[in-house]
Image 1 (tube, rainbow, N blue to C red):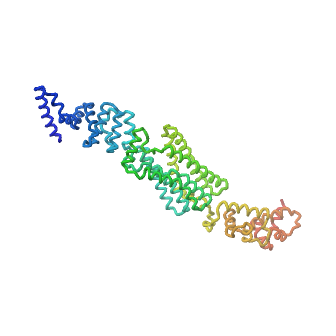
Image 2 (image 1 turned 180 degrees about the horizontal axis):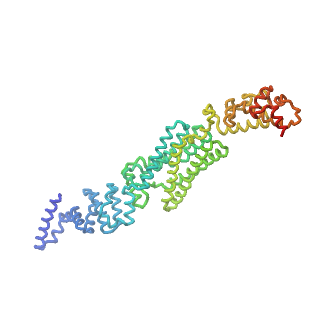
Length: 507
């Protein structure tokens, strides 16, 4: 029945009612089914609503709520507004939540009809979580996330960074940036506009620790990945499988209903129903891998496996990560005890943002630090850049070489050669040359002469009676002839052996 027809019919019924009153037949008229149906129609409900008779309107709206032919969204909206006008915030917001599950239109909450309850806790609880808003915090998080994605791009296309290291640190920062983007969406309440963002970053909860651990391992130890390293991904695979069947496979409408249901109970709409379990498992993962990361880091620091700037960079990354683990653990403890934890969550998120910004700074200023041990080269000897000699083995061979020359004094052997020294070190000729070049910055022959001339000077100093001939000194320290000895001695001291001996006697 159209509006005009309804009012014409209303006039007819009114005239009929007047005639019935004149004839004393009012009771018969009001009991007719047609009149009862008219009294319970939406037009009557709207009429009472428009003249502010909200109680009367409510009774009729509620009768039409279960009517399949009625416009359910219209009825729910009017019930919510009527209860708001009667200043029943709890009932109004309950109905409002029902309406949003049928037709999600958050702009309806801006209706002036809700002004009587707008400042109540019940209404704020739903309006502040449903109405989209762009805040300075949401913009800041969005900005950091975009920086993170830019940093990932820089790292991925920087060919100077060792490939495995590049993949691990890029993935690590991508997950941080993805999580921060999720926070930006949550802070602006756009999760209802984009329901598939529900738990969109949760799948990576168990990846942060393994990625950083493998990165440290690969850069400090020049670790080569094996098939067993895939075992680190098992928790993530299980979590993805679980979320795929319980969350990700569902429709937008279902996810909106889940989130609204959490709002109705005063909970964060973006949290999972298994929040406590997920937080506890994530803390366990972060703690276990934090221990192993620290172990690898301390070994690299103790054995000096990295150059100074690489060591400083990894120290900062490690400390930022540990700060995140601590703050997230504190957040989890509060969550488990059902205590508000907004501040701690913000601090842990800020530590993730700090990680993104610091890595971004490094990617622009000193990208060579990402390779760690793979950047461990002496620029005077670029031929060793692709050597398979690890820093730890290099240091070990260095110590063995020093022992051979200082204790066994193999330099005295006049047939000493690079191959002979390599054999004694139980390594290759190439590795022997590399450790001498990199650790002492000299060639093999210069290294041998360094020890020979040092002992020769000592012999000349001790021979104050000049009983030793120069040739005898040369033979004693490993030279085959006086000419070669004199040449090497003068290169070191700017004096011939005889001149040096005379200068000693004058002292």
